[in-house]
Image (cartoon, rainbow, N blue to C red; front, side, top):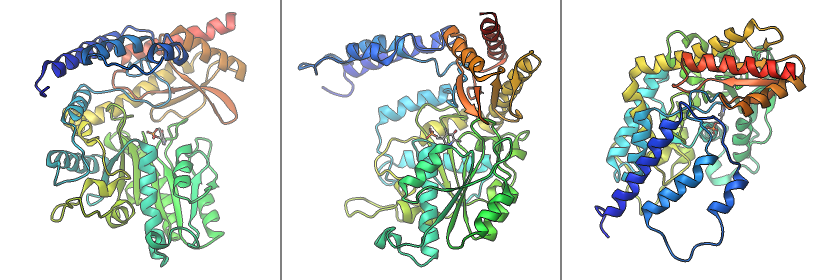
Amino acid sequence: MSHGDDDYVRALAAAVRHSTAWLRSLPGRRVGPAAAAHDLTDSFGGPMPRGGMPAEDVVDLLARTAEPGLMAMPSGRFFGWVIGGTLPAALASDWLVSAWDQNAGLRYATPAMAAIEESAGHWLLELLGLPSGADVGFVTGATMANFTGMAAARWRLLADAGWDLDRDGLFGAPRIRCLVGRERHDTVDLGLRYLGLGKPAVVDADSQGRLIPGALDALLAEGSGPALVCLQAGNLHSGAFDPFPEAIRVARKHGAWVHIDGAFGLWAAAAPELRSLTRGYEEADSWGTDAHKTLNVPYDCGIAIVRDASALRSAMGLHASYLVHDAEGPGDPFEKVPELSRRARGVPVWAALKSLGSDGVAAQVRGLAAAAADIAAGLAGEEGVEVLNDVGYTQVCLAFGDDATTRAVTARIISDGRVWMSGSRWRDRDILRVSVSNWHTSEDEVRTAVDAVKAAFSAVRGG
Ligand SMILES: *Cc1c(COP(=O)(O)O)cnc(C)c1O
């Protein structure tokens, strides 16, 4: 069978049919899934089939069976967690990445992928106002982006302390003191665990979850030796940003490496109206972000940015006799990420940036923050509704009196299905958490969200 054969054409045509039907269903469909995973395992499972099935039929069966178990996450009415949507250019180019099937690790072997990702990297640094010489690696998400940045930190801090990490590992190494804000994302702790750096020391935060620089200074002053400080751009509850100029000044005074987790917050730097939130953050050493959240490329794509390219390449690079290493150029993609073989995740990022332009990215990020502000404003005046955070970015935290009522309102919204929002706990209270991260969320979706919350609250009160 050749590659031009009808099997490919028919299977891809089926994928286009089902994808188009899915995308067309998004504006009107109920957001939550109609089936739970255990309702579907029988349809997908059973004994491993002995014989095969034509590719087109597999795609048809897959799409039909999956349909009731799909969450309308790419809909503008999905406000759960921070998920993002998918821009048309990003989605279509992601299909191309699969069709091309390039292993994007080696610059020499897949020159187009390397060139596209390098360009996307340069654009990102310019867009986000980060140092133009920094290394950019495309990983699966912010968890791995943070891990990658902190791995470079570990390598550099130990090298500066005279310790050969690659030869001697961590046993007997000088201890690296790791410090995080009280409201950092849990995946920062996970990254530190992967790196064998243990549990971080926790720095106190203010009412919006911003790390307090004075408290950081006091904790750092208690000890000495190598230190890694992890700051945050975009608190998952309040959307707040750590005070970078002050916190970085304190960290520098103690010789610490500064990493910033900006999974969805780094993008504030791309919008002139929001840029003050990230003021001073370019002075850090490394940054982790997601492209699958605020930029709206399909899952999965995160971005690791490291100023000290040699630390990153020392931590992630490898030399194998069978690989053809990039000698003249800017180095191989695999030197900047944990993986050797991987898909060209930077391609949909390039396509998203090309389709939007910097004005478009700015408008998109501004639009997300404006929608969050409008949802908060639409509910703030309602008797019994509390907006708990200062809404300055994309996050809104709501409470409805006591915890039980808030939980009931959350459950009611989810069962109503017009919008989807998740519950959480913040500042010792149950909350309804609204995250705006999808380019499809416009005035209509904002109105629907406000109406759905009001209706759920009044139903809970009345019942
Ligand atoms: C989502 C998120 C992460 C983890 O990102 P993944 O893409 O899920 O790996 C880390 N930090 C923050 C602030 C986040 O919002």
